[in-house]
Structure formats: structure tokens, C-alpha cells
Length: 191
Image 1: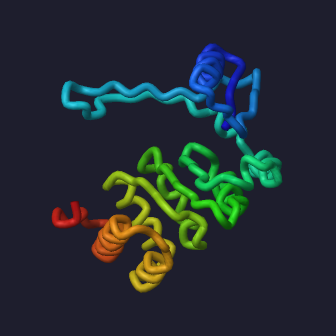
Image 2: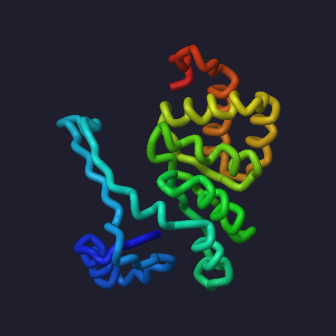
């Protein structure tokens, strides 16, 4: 990740020390602001509005990811967590660089950015994703536009070695992929 030399960075760094977390892979850039996200929720906890400043994360390039490959903390990672705020080339590089013993978890972050994982996922480089239904619909449409068939999707889902609860989730994703046509709504039975 990228951190600026600002108050947010100082607060996070101080908190990490207090809870005895040693952060790894954080690049300090004094010419950037640490990424921020602010959500305004209603009384039910639903999102009303949000604002984000994720510009600094664009400084995380494939070259930076390649610098991490040989570091012990990266080689020994059990799970690499990536969100869609990083550029697609960087995301793909991080997935390719992930140790064979690591899983890769992708957090879509938004509908428009969610499709950044499609190529990496189809090459077997993403093990887990956590989309909401709108992000999942965008991913499915992107897969469809790339000409992937339901049979290819089913094959990818069956290649994943995961606990039973996740298998059901994968089956639901397969059903969703098989029903989505870009001009149609997601069938209510999928929710």
C-alpha cells in the first residue's frame, strides 16, 4: 500500500504500534495523501453517500509489487488481499507474484472497479472474491462480453478447493452467471 507523510499515516502507524502489528509492504510517499474513504450511513446502516480519495494507490505500480516478491513476509503470506482501487496492471502483477501457497482474496470496492479482477480470475489467479450483488452482476457481464461460456465458468468453479460453505456460494455464482443477459435484471431467486 501507499501511505503519505500526513496525519492519517501517523495515526495508523501509532495504532499499529499500540496493537503490536508490524505492517509490511507500505511505501511511504511524502508527496501523496494517505487514501481515505468516508461513508455516510442512514439509521438502518445503509449507505447514503460516500467520498473517497484513493489517488495515492495509483502510485502502487507493478514494479513496486515485483520488489516485494523476494521478501520473506511476502513469500510466507498465507493470503494476499487485493482491492480494486489499485490499477488493473498492478492487480494482475500482484496475483501473478503471489506465492503458490498463498490464496488471493479480491475485494471489488465498487461496481465500476469490480471488473478489474476478471482476467486474473479466469487465469486461476484469484481464489476468493467478496462482491455485493451489483458488483457480481458487473463481473458476470464482463465475463459474458469476453465470450466466456457457462461451461468455462463451471470448470473454474469446480477447480477451487474450498470448504463446503463456499462451494454453495460458487454454485450460486454459477447460477447467476448463467442467467445474466446485459439487458435483463438479475432474477429475484438469485438473491
